[in-house]
Amino acid sequence: MGKDVEVAEQQGGGGGEFSAKDYHDPPPAPLIDFEELGKWSFYRAVIAEFIATLLFLYVTVLTVIGYKSQTDPNLNTDQCGGVGILGIAWAFGGMIFILVYCTAGISGGHINPAVTFGLFLGRKVSLIRALLYMVAQCLGAICGCGFVKAFQKSYYNRYGGGANELADGYNKGTGLGAEIIGTFVLVYTVFSATDPKRSARDSHVPVLAPLPIGFAVFMVHLATIPITGTGINPARSFGAAVIYNKEKAWDDQVLKFFHYTITFS
Image (cartoon, rainbow, N blue to C red):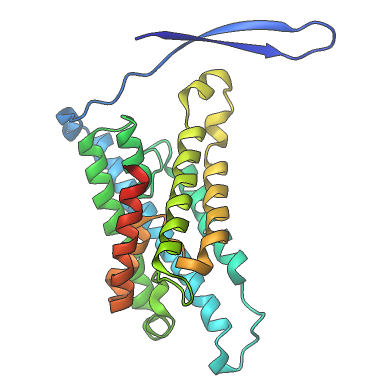
């Protein structure tokens, strides 16, 4: 394995004081690592992904439904009331920031099958870990939406269950393009924020990693909520579609499948 040498310059007054740090690229994760199956830390990580995705869907779907109920024209409500698209985007970005911060030391804080799959392609996680993470994330999303429906069934059914659907006036090509770019922004930010070379150079970077990831989610939601409802998280889209279980929500899952395929191909 080759060795890169990072030179960090401490900026001062007249002359620069330099210190060299040796950096070794971490070895790639094994494709299939059966030893993980015998470790409690592995199962703890899978459980963390399940719980984090459950909480993520519970809070964010409640936010979406709450906004729609507060601005329902049939109830003579204030159309400028509620949290608005800005508040919904903050809910998604803020929850990702919180949950990545809480679970980064346990599971890596993926909370998104697209992130997990991207890290697998980058040889950051093994195939076994990636598969079980994605299963846990999808199950957590289903349970999170299930809790919302169990607690507020009438509101859940009336206001679309937080399911992602292509908005009227947009064709599938527009939705596909928006989702491809949005998913790329998120995964690109994750790779940048968790770059081990940055960790070796700047000790504060691992602590700040959840912040840019949360902001990436926030910004992408601002741009794509009016188009597709934002489906950059397959577990979020799948869980809502399973519990809501309406034809249009399922039809638009095909669009999301194609955008994940194109993004990582």
